[in-house]
Length: 167
Image 1 (cartoon, rainbow, N blue to C red):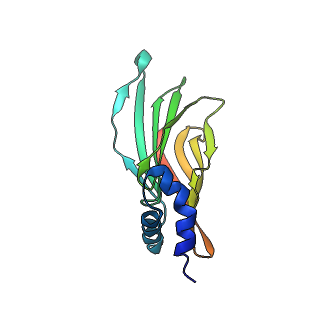
Image 2: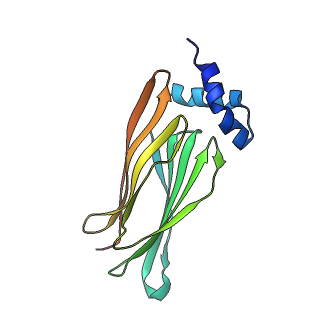
């Protein structure tokens, strides 16, 4: 059974929303999953900066491809190090190479991690993002998923880093 007509029908609202044909999106999706994709996270090199109040801080960015060319996230964290640490998070999703609006939030001692579920119809992820452990090290963990005909495929996501807020 050819799943393409059903896929085109399912992708029609997404295609209208981003201004492309559902046939084009279906071909792009089928090409992406034919490669049996696994999530890929890549850190974008950044520099340290002098934070307000004279402290040291960092801005780090990651590109997370849940399914390449179908669903991706740009994750950026800006943090001030030390006892009175502070951090902000920006997440920008991309669906079929169309960048969507950025979401922002602040981390604090009482809110040092969050769980998000970015998804679009045929692919998604269940992620925990935040600062973990006694040294408050930044990490991204979770599960990415996408649909193949008659199957939901799961792959783990784990990105631990040496980016810690406390010594």
